[in-house]
Length: 364
Image (cartoon, rainbow, N blue to C red; front, side, top):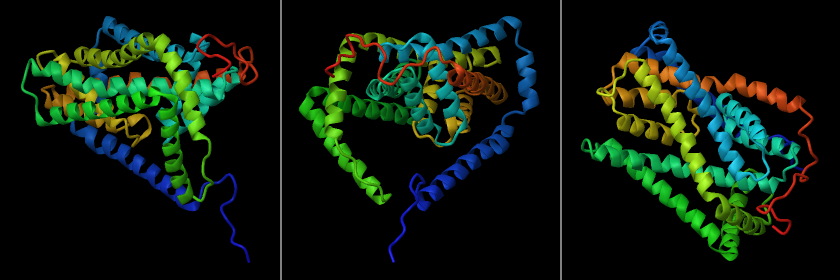
């Protein structure tokens, strides 16, 4: 009698069990934060009362800032993906953000959806991979560098605490590691090939535990990645850097405006302190405990801003308004953009037929 392996197309039973457990833990964390933690600071009725207390001008300014924040990441996508239009980037960004914010493990699903959307518009998998690699690295550069900037700014106004020093050192270590990996990858084709070989062996070892076949050809793939990535960065790194920084600062602007409009003054929490707490909360989202950091971000922001001197009820109201504009709002917009993508045929091309540019030569 021969052993029967896992059914093709279905993950192993152990992997399904671990995914289910991860989902349950994520739900438990979200429920604990929303049902137990938040009521210690404020109630939904108090939040609504605070929102109603804002002037019409403040509401309009917040909505404009939220809209601008949603629009800024499209510039990163256009900068890292030669040939991608701003309208296509908008549809892609809104749709994948909605998936990441609503599904446990949504980052992986959003990744696959990005490949599917770009392929439907005629872009090859390699062009999408380079865009994801560069935009992901630059996002992490800014995310890891922000605590360092915030700690430096705070050093001029107050002695840094142990928590701030830890966040700053974590940012420095992570940023240095990311820069080293990128430098090694771009150093030469031979170095890139060696990185691909090591990564392929590691991936094969993990797949072996899951009873999957090993991977092959990663050394050739990383060499091609290196060539195209070096070409893109040589031409566009200033624009990519500017677009990424603007995107992150736009997100912080929504938080800062929510704090000010809902009663947390500069004398209670200065903008540099708010930036430090914001940077620490962003570091926590590097590990996807929950979809879109739901529960984790609220916990970090409310405790951090309250500890900095903000009134607890006002801080909680501001954080909930901020999350409504940056976490909840993209979900219905992303649903609409997904429906548009599925029904719109005017942008469709056969795979790998998108026009090439000087940054996407045939030889790479």
